[in-house]
Length: 191
Image (cartoon, rainbow, N blue to C red; front, side, top):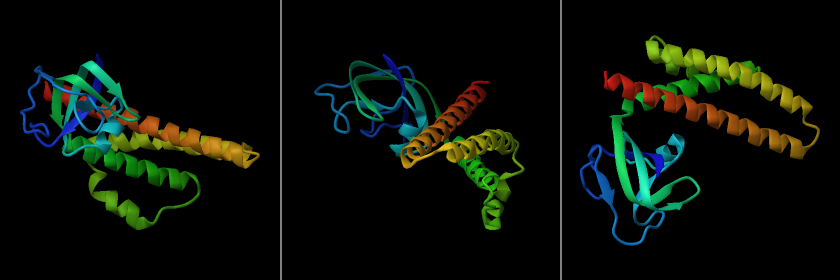
């Protein structure tokens, strides 16, 4: 059994079956990535790449399981819970945008004022303000580490390794923040 994330377009699966919490679905026939079976991704950002809509479910895959690079497919899937992630995804996009702008500022490259202005309507929302504060703290530390590793890089191989490490750090921070936001939304929905 493996817990995964899975997006749908509303409360129906791609084959028009209803998405029912707690119901285990069974696939007859071969299980093959991108072709047949019940899919899901260990990482939420990976699942987002395949999202046909904004209904997000936390699921368990079981039975026969085949692993791909960024998703899995199984002969059985059970949805544990689901939320409409539209608002979460919107707030996450704002968080990422603030983080990118702050990283540019920290690197000494002031972003175009129109970029800041585009985020202006979101600045006063309490959730976005908390997210922006977290983004500022993370990206300030990230920018300092980035500058230090770049200065220390003596050759192209070291610079390439640093770039890969930096990208992984950003991806990890984004995955962590998005999962936090989704779990918070799910918890608030249950209150």
